[in-house]
Structure formats: C-alpha cells, structure tokens
Length: 483
Length: 127
Image 1: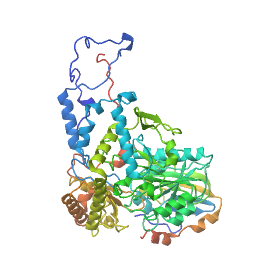
Image 2 (image 1 turned 135 degrees about the vertical axis):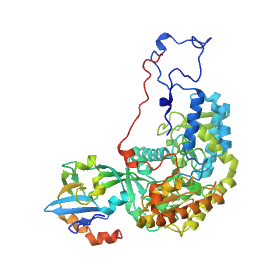
Image 3 (image 1 turned 90 degrees about the vertical axis):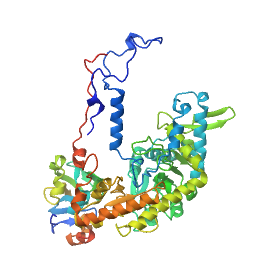
Image 4 (image 1 turned 120 degrees about the vertical axis):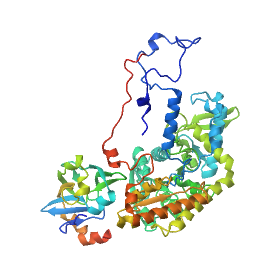
C-alpha cells in the first residue's frame, strides 16, 4: 500500500527553491507577522508528488475507470467539455469576494442557470447556494419552519415514507423539526390512508422522493399533494431521482411546493470523491422570499446579487460552488430541452433493460416497469451462505463498482441498481453476464464470493474494526527543521 | 443458529420479551442479529428511564445500518446489560442469553397481550 506524503517526506528535498533572502521587489510583512516555527509540510520533489498521486489514482474506481451502477447516486459520465469550460481563466481566477461590477459574467451565468432550472422544475424561484443534496433538504425544511412561523403558526412535524433517503429525517432534525415515518404499501408506494392518518395541523411538511428509492413513480402524487395541502402542510420533493424525469415532468405541476436538484447527479457535475456538490432549491412564488443566500437579479445597469427579503440566512460561505454551477449550465445548454428529455428516456430504458435481463437471476420484490433504477434482493443466495455484501465485493473483481447495497431498508439484502443513460448496450450486457456468473458461483463455489475481492489492490477489509477502532494519524510536527 | 425460547414473547420489530413477575427482560432475536450482521455499537436506555410502548429508547449500529431500539413495554428501566458497551458482538453470538439489552419493571402487563408467541414470530419471519 502507498505511504502517505508525510511518510514519504525527506528533510531538505523541496519541490522548488525560493530565491535566497525571499522574494525580491515585493513588500515584506513586518517581522511580527512572519511565522517563526516550521510549517510541518512534507518535503518532496515534484516528481515524488506526481508519482504519489498517479499511483493513488490507479487504486481508485471511478466512472472514468469502469461501470458504476450505484443506485440513487446517478454516477453518470462527467463530460470533458465541462472541465474545459470550468478551467477558463476568467472563471477559474475569480474570487467569491469580488465586487459585483468585476464579476458580471459570473453573475450572468448564475442568472442564466436559475432560468434553466426554473424551466426544468417549473418553479418560479431557485436558490443556487446549497452545496449538497442534503443541504438542499435542510434549506427546504428551514424554509418550511420559517414560513409557518411567519404566519404565526406552530407546526413541528414532517412526514417521511420508510423508503426515504436517510438524509431526510436528519435534515428535519437539523431544522429543529421532528420526523414521523409512514410505512409504504405492499406495492412500494405511499399508502394514501397511512398518509391521511398521519396528517394533522401540527404537520409542517411531507418529504417525498419521486420516483422513490425503489425506482417506482408515485402514481398517486396528485392525490397525495391534495391531502397534504388540505392539511395546510407543504409538499417537498427530494430531487435525487430527477434523472428519471428531466424534460418529461415539471415537479411543480405535480403539486410539490419545494424541491432540490442534485447538479452532481442529474446535471453531470463530478460526484463521489470528485465533488464538491451542488443542491439548488426551487420553490413556489409564495416561498421565494425565504430562499437562502444571494439572489441574482438582472437590472438596467447589469446583474446584482442581493439576499431575499425574509431569507433563512446563508448556508455556505460563498454563494454556492460556482464551478459546479458552471458545469451544470454547460451540460444543460449543450443538451437543450430535447436532449434532457433523451437523458431521462435513456436512463429509464437502460434500467428497465437490466431489470428485464436480471429477472431470472435475482429476486425483484417490487417487479414491474421501473424508472431510472430498480431494487433486487440477494435473499435467494442466503442458503448458500452468501449475502448481498459478498456479491458486491465480487463485482469489484470484474472492474465494476458495486450497486448501492442494503438500501432501501424495506427490501432485505437490497441491491439498488442504476446504470444511467451514459452506458452502452455492450456495457449493460457485460454487467448482466457478470451478475449471472456471480450468482452461479454462489451455488457452485461460494468460497470465492466469501473471499472476494481477489484482484483489487486491497482485499476484504475489516469493516467492524474500521468502525470500532478508529485510528487517527496526526501529521508529524515540523519541530527543529528550520522556519 | 440460536434456539428460540418458547417462554418468550416476540414483537414485529424483532425483539424478544421474557417476563418474570413484573419485570420484563428485552433483547433482539436471532433473526434480527443475523439481518444486522456484525453489530458495532449499542446504545441502551439508562437505569431509571421511564419507557413508553413503541418509544425509541436506544440505538443499534451495525456495519451497514443503524436502527432504533423500540421498547415493547412501558415501565421503568431497572437493569441494563453493561457488557454490551464494550462487546456488542455478544448480541451476535448469544442473542437470547448473554446478549440481553435491558430490564423493565412493567407498569402495565396489558402491554404484553399484543405480542406474538414463538410460533407466530417464526411464521412472520418465514423460518
């Protein structure tokens, strides 16, 4: 295994040398402001550093290295064009602290993206500030709380189906509200009776993922929205699964009052270690005044950025991860409305193809037409002493990332498979062949699965040990090594 | 696989309840520990806590999931299994004996009437 940079450090081997006596011709800070102690940074040549990171990159799996069907994460291809544009010096060299008149181009870009996201969602107002999906959820719950406080109402509860992402109840708690779980029906969808029973005048909001985490569209969504609104509550859409709907449906038209989008899922910005994320929130006109951060407006004298009148505050030091906003806008402009429609069409087609081809290999508890993902169960492998975890580990031996496993919680031994639209038929067929081989191995030679992965840089990790025995390595301090 | 005691009652949340006089001992079933797989942390209620039926009173953390512990009965906590703090894996190895969670002095024995017997529970989990 690679050593970390601090372990590779050799005293006196700098990457470059500063001129003797420090930089010439520039103002010097007073002595009182110069640090006296060593910085404690590792000392390596540029080549040492380059080799270190190239080696690390070969140990990693990414969408650039192979298939990555991680359900609910939408690990789609990140187009190179996005990176080229984000690297333009006019963008890359900007600082969030610059005055508006010096960053008119950046503000225009943000304004433009807001218009696009309004068109995608059907909501009349969008905040670009949240920097993660879960932060978008939190923002929406904070808006719900502020909205009712503003009306002089006290509502404390948020209803969440048992199929929801675990971030939903966490976001509710962070916003100072309490979550109430309702059980899904046998068909995996929200049961209207259970929802009606849970609704009352203490409910601030209902959080719903549509399509839900089983990859099923909530077909009763309009009836759900009516129940929620009749109870005076707000309906929020967790937009993690928007890749199934782009260009097809405006969530606002389904009766939602708020939603977040994951630009790092649906709109192709980097994801999974390559982030950072971006989770813009769209809301109805009634809720627009509560949106966080700066809202970009176009005036006669150019673009300006001001907080909304009753903003819940700011959830990020700057106004969101600008370079991600840039990439997402590039993706949207490049595809256009028809292209975005093809995205969701391709995502749904690919998922249904995999589901149909794996139907005789793995149990699919909520079988039927799926959206952009589906959930299989590894339960049938249990008699062989093999579990879903072992299947996931074995997939790594074939250069494929495992699907999301053990989620959603309502399916035992779950494998949540989301191929995305960017995979070819050949890749999907290869995945099917590998899954069939692994399931055959489970019956014929389960030892292979229990020992997998066999070909990766590291084998089966001690996950219990990793959770129970945290080992934190402190960087060595640079004592006695000059200043 | 551990033997399911027939003198215990069982809940749909995969807990077992053993009653002696007015004190109930509570733990999770062999099926539950198997589903959770390697348990890494268990947070139990404290001595003297007053529990309600169905109220969340602790947490079980395994490698792949964290679950709430729901009290199947109402009453005061009169004993907790301190050994689980350092060695939660006891629950994986001995769910019905050494892996018990906590004891409750029952405030209402009617709470027990909704619980399942061994056969009904095993039928529910399909074993």
